[in-house]
Length: 485
Image (tube, rainbow, N blue to C red; front, side, top):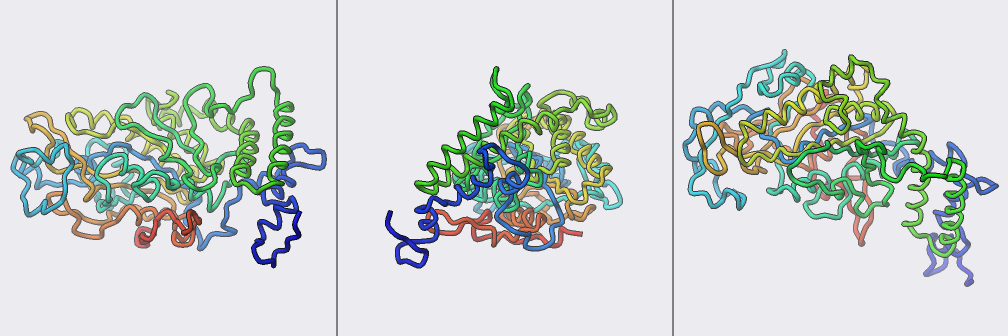
C-alpha cells in the first residue's frame, strides 16, 4: 500500500480513509455491528435515518406532508374555479383573442371548432370565506374555511407523463429525484422504524399508468426512494421472513451480510453498498413496525364512518387516507396517495361525479381527523393533479355530454394545515378560465413552498451529480409567503 496523507497531492480525504480500510460506509457499519458482530440498537438506527441537514434552515410550519395526488388532471372548471361566462356562451367558439398562439394537444389541435363548454354542476359560496365550491364536493364544501384554494397554478407540460414527472421531480425528463426523496435526503425520518417516504396507490383504478419513477430516488442514494404500501396481506413486498426463518436467524443473516459489505467497503467506498446497508437495516426494523402501523382493526367505527362507506375496503382511497393519518401519527414525513382516472376527454358529466364520490368524503375526513387530533396545525395536506382541463369541448359537444382536453395554462389545487392560512382563494383566471390574470403559481413555486413549510430553503438543499449541483426546483421557484397565516 502506498503511503497517503490527506494533504498529499492526488490523495483526498476519502481516498485516505479507503486505503486505511475506513471508508465512510465502514465507519457507519462499525457502529451498526456491535463487538460481537450482531445488530445493535437505537443510536445506529438514528444514524441510518438522519438527513443531511443538521437542522432546518428556518423554523418549520409543518412536520409532515400528505399529498393527495389526483392523477389524470381533475377539471378545475367543474370543481374549484367557477366560470359563469362559459355557461352563457356554451357552444360558441373559443375566441382567438383568448387562446392567442398557445399550443393545443394533438387530440384537439386538429378539430375544426373549439366550442366552449359550461359546467353542468352548480357552485355555491361556502363558509365564512364565501369560497365557491362545486356541488360535487359537498363534504369538502363544509371545510372551506380550512382551505387555501389556489386557482392560478400553471405548468410547462401538456401531456401526462411529462406533467406528472414535472410535478413530482421538478423536471419533465425522467431520472431526477422525486420531491419525497429530496425531503427524505434532507430531513430523514422522525421514526427510525418506518421509512420517511411512503406511497399508496388506490386499487382497481384505470386511467394513465403510474410508474415508479414518480416516487423514485433518481440520482440520490437509493434508500431515499419511497416505500410503496400495498393493499395485500403483505403491505410491503419481500418484507416478511420466508418460511422457516425466524427473527433471530434473520438478524444473524443480516449481520453476516453487513460483514461481507464491510470487506467490500475496505477496498472502495461504494455508495451503492452504503445504500444497501441502510436499506437492509430499515427492512429489519420494519418487520416489527409495519404490521402494527397498517392494522386498522383498532380504528373505532366512528372513524370508519367519518371516512365513508369504502373505509374498510383495503386499497380504496378512503382506506389509504386512514392509513396516511396513521403513518403521519407515527412520524412518516412525506406520504403520497395516488388516485387515478381523472382524465376525462369524453363523458365528463357522467365520469366526474364518480371520481368525486370516491374521494370527496375521505379527503374531507382526513382534514377533520387530523384537526381533532391536533395534528392539522403541523400537517400540510395537498390535493391536486398534474395540470388542468380546457374550457372548450374535446370532440363533439352534445346536449348531455362533453369532454375536456389537457390545459397547462391554469389549474387549481387546494391545501390545508401545516401553517397555511385557511379560508383564502389565491390567484385568478380570466372569465373564460383559459389564462391566469392574477398571481400565477408555477410548479417550481409550489415545490419551493412545500419545502419552506418543512423548514427547508429550496436553494440550499442540493446534491452534486455529473459535475453540477442539482436541486428540486432546478434554478427556479419562489416561496408563496402570503399563503401562510
